[in-house]
Image (spheres, rainbow, N blue to C red):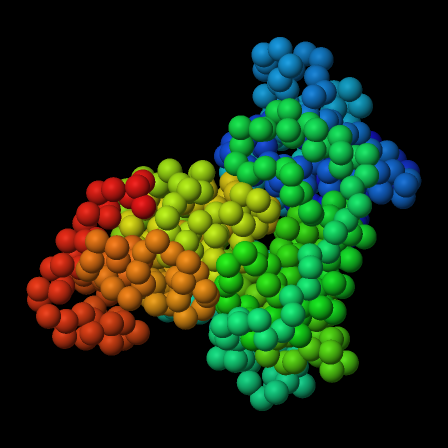
Length: 521
């Protein structure tokens, strides 16, 4: 008998390890363990989503005829190490749980699918076979379109990697939005059509609501009991926790939001936390949805004239382009990639990243969304909370841990390259050719946040000037040696050089004052 271990981000009935096992002979194991739930302070809703989705998935597997063993967080293991205080779960690891069940069931081999985190995969490859004393079979995760080996082959001989060229290869491979070997519409990328500010031109559709069953309620109670000290809160838990509910979320997006997603995907608006975004990344990243089924549904909407090409192309690009690309970067360069700090940032993460209280309206809006829903869309992450961390010179590993902790869709393979590379430019420009640094003018262009802010977006040198404005020019000046010869930043440095010297000094002085008092903004 073989024992198949299914991880929390592998809740797919098409999983490679499931296909390698025999339901008439073999057994499956799913486990909630404190070590995985708390190695960073994961958002309470993230833990609740995964625990409940795992329990529902286990029930579906049993209905299909599988023998499933489920280790709940409060369960104890006879003879396992790890003491606990009264009323708290023991700090078991996945290895502890796996050893227990292998011993109790007399398993002859363990079967897993490669996981999404280098830390855990290293344990699986280097420690588990010896600790378990039996064969361990690890299968490639073919839910992704591009394997690790295929990505490595694509990088060979390239002086510089660019997602756009990788994306074109994935379009050709999948056939999505292709007319033979040419892109539908005559161009690969319609991003220039996708940068509109939202001013209420199109009515917003309320978020889809799900009926939470007894399993959901039990998990919410469990999380409240053991993780109330973690970020976020549970009173607005709106996530679906089953495959059917994830599919309903996808259908809701395709019908009501996809037609407008392209135009407004970069927009932000006070009090509106979702706009036209899909809200399916947590389901994609835990396995309740698969990339190709999502993309095919979006493509069909275009073919049926239910969504414009710019919206569908932009959405598909995020999945088969950027999502696959950052995964390739992650596995190509870990573990060294996670330690990079190319701009030599030394400032600790400000306290309001954990409690959300700040007079910067754009930041407070993004924090509210983050803690209330375990969600923020990509522009809120990249151009607000991420941009601020970049401008302020925050230690990359601290902001990476924050993103990993607070978002329901955050897993190391996707979060780390996005944050360390794209947001923080800590990889020296490997992931992006220029830093995504911007002043408050960008935020003002794409949102109404600045109208409601304590600070003035119109100035950079005054006592009430927008911190983004002052810190932007400070960032430009302090990193001049790295960036002034970057052809994409020539205009920026030309504008800085044309500025009167007394104004430059006033802006830099204002920025220094802000940096000395980051926790008071």
